[in-house]
Image (cartoon, rainbow, N blue to C red; front, top):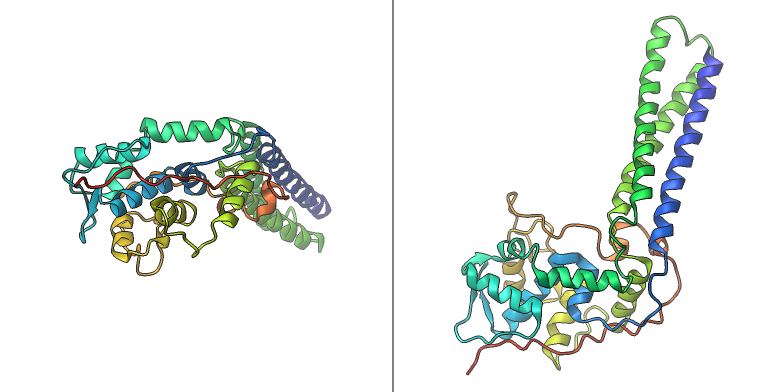
Length: 321
């Protein structure tokens, strides 16, 4: 009996390893699919969405508008409109201005929540999907079905591992050294199964395609962290925040104010130390390439011919004289 249990444990390890590999293979097949051969000239808001999803895009707009003087962020982290500020030709900036005007004095987290389904954000997402930079909706359905099979196999392995000592107590097994091997390999299959399931589940959250990651890497090489160009608002504020988050703001008070109430804030250290368990997790998801998928090799190697990262043009907002 013990030798059959050992063989069963071996089979479980083999099955679970195979299932995990099939999930990864299907996931990478979709991620690395070439959906567009065109060059990519992305705005800073498109890069922000690619780097950090809807939250990063809204944070970038808030940072630009606050720096331009179109909105005011108080020490209490309240965002208010500035009287006399002009409208913006940039849809996302105008959506933020409208949201702030609708709920003056609310925090940035409330503004982000209010803009969850705004046409401006949906248009950003649609353009990135059309350009092949985000994975098409439903493209990972096969990988998700395989992931569910892996989950069931992991639970089956756990049931097998629990049954082993029960069989030993009943006197049916445990009379041979092979039983120890069955316990060890059974436990190993449980560990491999659940760790593989959670790893692939996390990686499947990544909505950025391989092409999207290459474009994002290209933009970050063109605009390295800490080397902001102060000649325009877009280069001084929008691009650094879009690519790297609110930590790139020179104004620490503004960074703290915009990150207040956001447990997933871009900010680190003293900036962004605020927490609010009741705040929205809007925008939390698989963006930014390797942040949700392990190493950059997941998205396919090689350099990109993309000439992205221009994103010219500062905000058209500001206080009118």
